[in-house]
Length: 293
Ligand SMILES: [Zn+2]
Ligand SMILES: [Zn+2]
Image 1: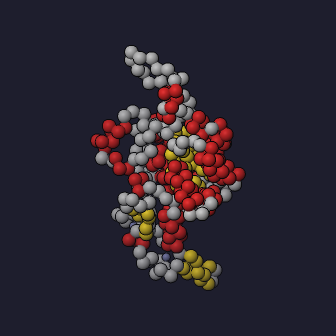
Image 2: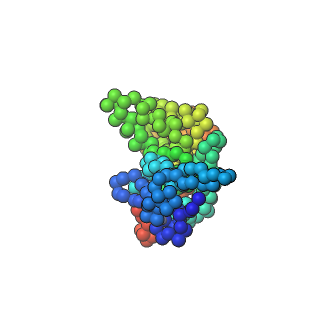
Image 3: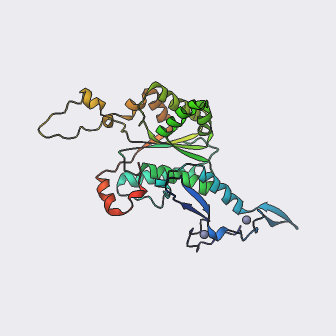
């Protein structure tokens, strides 16, 4: 099989290029070095010697097209369209280990084996969405494994909108229940009503029972964090005001014990927190558009 030229400046030898179009989900396309396939002249087949005769074999460009089509179905938001392991910046030990874990997961993942996923937690701005999408990009474009990305709040509004047009919730959930790898972002941002929890429970329990892998990202911590120091004023952590402050709640408080223990069965929990004032750094780094979550 002839490989795309590693010298290609546009794709670096990958054979595909991912594009960022504002307002649209990430799209990949064949690199210009791959248009008009030099191996099969677009017939889709190449002749390879087998013993004394020649047999037709599917050309590698068709695998490339399949992988591009898988990637284009993921639903990666435009803001992180270019997210990959290569473009992930590590600026702390947490970052380095979270990236190593996600990359190891993506490289070793095999669809035919039941594999635990990972759940990234930490305040916004740590690059959680970037890592989720980098893993999905690797799975689809490099390995040809189907994957989907959803923001849980947006999924809930799709389900609600479906009721108005007489589409049951299963119609919307089914493709997400069946896809080999699903990433659920912004977990626990929803209000946490019984209905919302039942949707989440149905989605992840069915995936779990089918032995499918699910990845998550959430802004909530696993344990109570230290109350921020407030000089000259004591803070009552039991006050209704403090309790109402969603930021101070833990993931298990947000999703409930049942779902929390299910998440534990499905995932390795990995902290990925900005660690310090990232927004200040971002302003100077010129890569602000790249980071989300
Ligand atoms: Zn190229
Ligand atoms: Zn070809």
